[in-house]
Image (tube, rainbow over all chains, first blue to last red; front, top):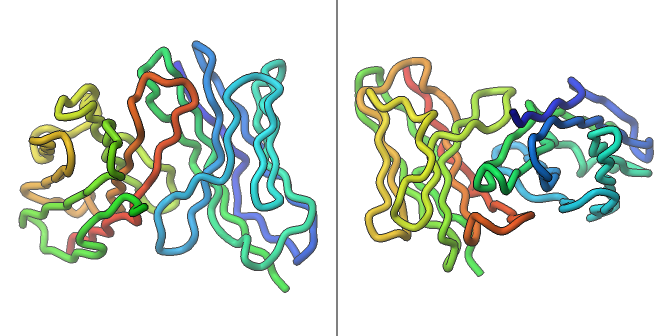
Amino acid sequence: GNSVTQMEGPVTLSEEAFLTINCTYTATGYPSLFWYVQYPGEGLQLLLKATKADDKGSNKGFEATYRKETTSFHLEKGSVQVSDSAVYFCALSDRDTGNQFYFGTGTSLTVIP
Amino acid sequence: EAGVVQSPRYKIIEKKQPVAFWCNPISGHNTLYWYRQNLGQGPELLIRYENEEAVDDSQLPKDRFSAERLKGVDSTLKIQPAELGDSAVYLCASSTRGRLSGNTIYFGEGSWLTVV
């Protein structure tokens, strides 16, 4: 079956630190991979996505590369800001299951000045 | 362009009472989803519509939950009667036609339900 596993949080970093949030997946077909971000009191917003192996998604300084050989889609940012404090969700969608989305449990990030 | 609109944003009800949530998807989006998100967890699918047809409702607790999307646009999710364990955020999302690879879903801000 399809599933997503994220590193457990919470993660606390100082401003300008390097961020990595690990995500691995299991899929029966050829999934598309996503990172969504949820700020306090809000819904989920798309951060970036990649639709095939070796694609790199990027947005707002965040990057993630679709690694089929390691079934991973780790989120990285070189220098985090206080405004990046949020919960980050890794997700996959699989066309073979009608593009049903599968979400990880989320990783809470707090950036301190 | 307006995003996914949900109402109410917040609702507090006593157990055994009914509650309903409304969602208006992004214009032109054929696929509509209802998710439930418990505190500290990721969203879990309750039901997915393609136009007015419910194509995946396997995770919807049908004894107390119901949903409809009569004209293939806006949708209502109802809980009757509510239980304490139903306290969660109910997220509506929409996307263009579901068969495309890499299709992105867009979420509303959620309806935050507290059952007391």
